[in-house]
Amino acid sequence: MQKLQDNLAKRSADTLAYSESIERSISDVRFTSHYRIPFPYRNQLSKTFKLGSIADESKGNQIKDLDGNWRYDLSGSYGVNVFGYDFYKECMQLGAQQTQSLGPVLGAYHPVIAENVAQIKKISGLDEVSFHMSGTEAVMQAVRLARYHTGKTHLVRLCGAYHGWWDGVQPGIGNNRKTHDVYTLEDLSEHTLHVLNTRKDIACILINPLQAFHPNSDSASDVSLIASDRDTHFDKLAYSKWLTKIRDICTHKNIVLIFDEVFTGFRLSYRGAQGFFGVQADMVTYGKTLGGGYPVGVLAGTHSLMKRFKDAKPVDVSFARGTFNSHPSVMGAMHEFLKKIQAPEIQTLYQTSEVTWSQRVARFNQRLLAEKLPLRITNMHSILSVIYTQPSRYNWMLQFYLRDSGLELSWTGTGRFIMSLSYSDDEFEAVIERFITAAKQMSQDGWWWTCDALTNKAIKRQFLGDMLTAMFPILRPVLPAPLHKLKSQNNPKAPNSKFVAQSDNNSSQVG
Image (cartoon, rainbow, N blue to C red; front, side, top):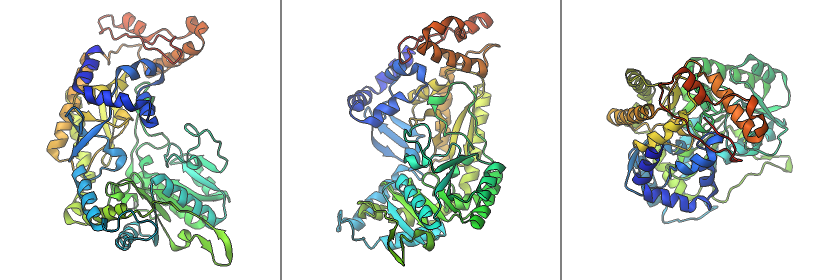
């Protein structure tokens, strides 16, 4: 641990110092710094292992920190980076040239907006477009309009799906306000189809196509990586049939089908998830990459659903407005983005990318198998996840070894790698080599020790015991013994990977 910490600190001294200087002033930094690792290790190890996500330059598929370290980007900038950073820098530069004479004029539209709308209508297969400043805003508007036009109260979201941080679509953890107008239903379930078919209060159903990768599970992240039972279950054919059934019910029951393509739009195919799964939605929300490098949210829908007023009722309106909607700079970069993705080379890339990424992941797994590492990579198109194949409590340590080997991850760690479609075979091979180097070092350092008694169930029992001990120290004698005792009893020659980490009340010893 000390060696790894010293490596990270030495290699990125300026970056880490800068990140620490702003941590107490920027709430996002403080949140992500503390939510990289499971709870019992948080107080001590969040201080020990800093990643310092500060960068001052990008090129292609790499990012450079303040110390001059270039890392291959596996974060995808939360989904923005579909075609490589140079692609977006050019969109921003050329877009600025188109709109710089107008400047930050709001209210009046720069004429480039007309072509943007025409292209979005063509791609979405829908009639009208409204612009927003984030994907969350676009989803808010879609739900509001669905309720407005159907006269019904409830929306349906599928288990595990993320639709932005608005509390109207995020019941549960992270939302302190109770919601009474949201049904959270099971993905890929006949019971859900029955509910949609029989209830009369459902205005819309929100579909995040990324859930096809891990139905009924939250997006994987290392903060919840307690044992080695993370898994994915992507079946394109099965999910296409499922969405087709939902489409049919929505048509017959006057339920608005909304595809939330803020993350998947322009990645899975030219027409996003609609093209990928072969299902037409009533409304589609876009964001991330469509801004050509700038923040944006977009809603596309049918004429009847996008109308915000009723002809015979002058005060019955559905109001939605954002001061910076249709900002000229955003419209200019968006124009360049939409023009670039129509180029023959991008269209060819769309046709081949699904097969390309499946082949790359297969090669990746062959290397992991050859090196006898307890890891497997799964994918949905160009979105990858790391699966751990033997019971271990310390899988979340891999994110720090990957960082040390020159790979840039998002704050979710190894749960999701968002790969740019612009990665060449050689670049991806370089990623594999760095990943293998990191995993071999982690293995040599003893983090993947094993014994007969070490099971995922035993790890979870120990984890629960640690939590209860932290809260109620009197229970220590009756709770599960530390896992390092299992190691010493069953595999006395295993490396000594025992260490102490403090829980929130600084009283729990974690083996």
